[in-house]
Image (cartoon, rainbow, N blue to C red; front, top):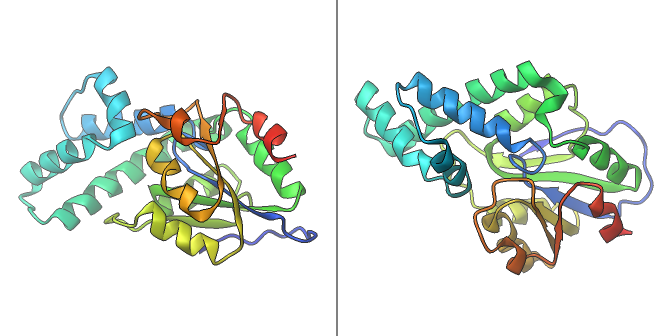
Length: 225
């Protein structure tokens, strides 16, 4: 878990608002482009419609690991996962370095700044590696935007529930925002209001799970007021 220092002095914390990262804060096309570049690196062209769906279900993991195993001879799943996420990190940071602020969902940075002005703490709970998240924020000059990062190690394997448990130790979780059912389902166990963001990698049934559905970031301000 990574903590960012927020340098501005604030009043009493109102609670924590949790965001998923890829597809919620980070524009969904960044992960798609990074995945395309990774597949190209590994010598494989993929159907783009399939890739869009695979980014919501992580179906592409097995194909990536199969290609890496074939190239390296490595069979150990943890090693293969680490290689896979290393390659993804390389390409995500490359794409973000090209796009800078355009890497984010439009107006999401402004929304988070406004939430912080209202004395909420901001956490990220994600299936993306910690060093990818912190790397993106550093490249774009937004290191102080997120207070707590609960992501993954290189070999992955930490559940959303584990990460939310760790987040809860920092304060009361008020809202959880995500673009996939897997982001939202477990959050209800923590008593948080669950918000589906329609601009990411939806996997299906999100609107049935969510307490609220929003189509653009600013709509969150109407919910929390």
